[in-house]
Length: 242
Image (cartoon, rainbow, N blue to C red):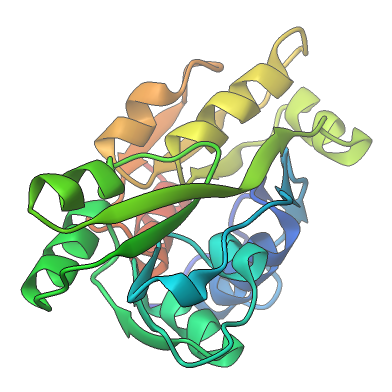
């Protein structure tokens, strides 16, 4: 867990991921920044499971790059092996009945783990409509039979009045961006709004930072690793005076 910030108060944190993911991150942020840290959850993405998911029982294993895919695909009839992008996704998969293993948090590590396991397939890569890393294609290129299925959609949602008021004020706001898609959706939600608040933006990766087309950040930090702890460290750095 990142070192707790010895500064009070910290700027308010605006979380725009889907609500369940935002609530988990808010809990971790308060543990690091202090119980009194202000957090506003204002999702700009709605996760919608899609019908017609394939029956995983016809596959020798499943590949998950998110917890949303686990929830959308549902429970297996038997403990089919599941290779998961990170520990949280693996925990969700185990809870649903999959025999899950966790990679180190990104698509490169996920592909490497499946290849190192000696999997031959056929595998199923269950993903959202927006996906990055070309996981299924890279597995096929490595000689592993792998189908892919879009099992959920990420749909834009408008910012609520509290978030608009926060961004229209003059106080600094911390804004974490966890994916290129969420960066684009937040930028689109801000289009046409008068954003006066200085934004201190923490991006999960350089690619996520490049996807941001919203107001120019007052300060920008890129996390040192693709995980929540690294994002919290980046946000703690941004919360401190320059």
